Amino acid sequence: MRIVVLVSGTGSNLQAVIDAVSTGSLDLTIAAVGADRHNTYGVERSTAAGIDGFVVDFKSFDQRADWNAALTEKVASYSPDYVVSSGFMRIVDQTFLDAFPNRYLNTHPALLPSFPGAHGVRDALAYGVKVTGCTVMIADAGVDTGPILAQAAVEVLDDDTEDTLHERIKVKERALLIETLRQLALGDR
View (tube, rainbow, N blue to C red):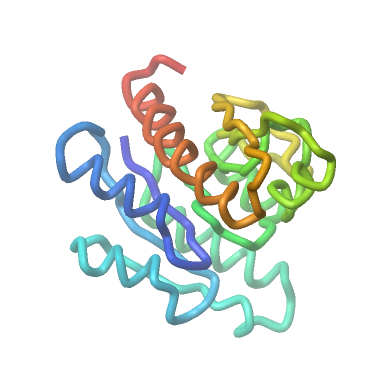
C-alpha cells in the first residue's frame, strides 16, 4: 500500500508512521510527504527519512480552486492508495476528494461526532466531558463528518488543561492511526 501524507506543522503523527514503517511493524510505503506552506518540520522529517517531500504553497495561489487543483495533481502523481491528513490545516475541495474517493484519511482529537472543527480539545474541556478521545475517519466535504474508521477514548483529568489533554490524545491518536493504516494495508477495512 502506498500513502501520501499531508502536513502543515511538526508532523508528530507522520514521525510515528515513519518509525512504524522503518521498524517493520507497518507494511506500507510512504510515497511522499506534502505541505501547504514552506518550512514545515513535517517535510523536514520526511527528507531526513529519505522520503520525497513537496510543498504546494497555499499563499502562492490567488484562487483556492487553483491551489486545490495543483495539490490534487501533485498528490496524484505519486499514485497513492490513500492520502493521510496528518495535521494538515487546509480544507480540500470536491475536486481533491473526487480524485481520492474514500481514500482521504483524517484524524481528529475528539470522539466524533462530538466536538468537530478546529478546537475539539478546547470544546470538550469547555463542555465538561469526563471522556474524550480521537477519531480516524474518511474525510468528506463536511467538517469532520466522514465515515468513522476507528476511535480511542482518553479520560479527562480534573486538572487537565487544553495542552495536557491534547498531548495525551496525541499519544492515542498516533497509535490509532498506525493500527488503522495496518488494517487498511491488510485489507481488513
